[in-house]
Figure (cartoon, rainbow, N blue to C red):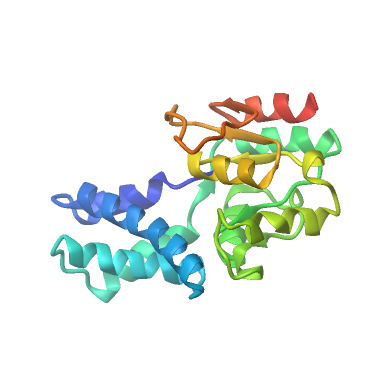
Length: 211
């Protein structure tokens, strides 16, 4: 749902010689830290995990990262918007009577920024940030938030995943799952497959409203 490409475009702009290498190291360590902190019971919110991952990534490729450049890169996360097809699709889902919420590793302020930047006000219920349960996806405590918030059974909820690993995590938990696979990536080898998939939000609308 969130278009993260501007983050990595900013990295390339600031570090033209090592931008691609920094982006890859940053993103990899960002997710590794969420999983390591959850497994080790040492939760820190996604903002801090992301900053720690950036600092580590720069050190790992021997790139000098000034505090000013670090802060500028982090600020980009508060400037992100949803993909262009998101707003009309969510309006269709709302008009069909579906209730919606972000269930995300991101902090509530990060999600608020996306909503504000993208004109999505009034479409979502309260954010289900993993800060509530101090455990990142794909921990079952994170996915449990959907049941607790909506008061529904697993089979009555459609979980829209935007990464292959998240689609697998939602299926492990037991949600009917739709994978919005914009990159047309291969299915993760994790023993499960989503119930549906497509390359954009229009495909999600068709899946969710047909249930």
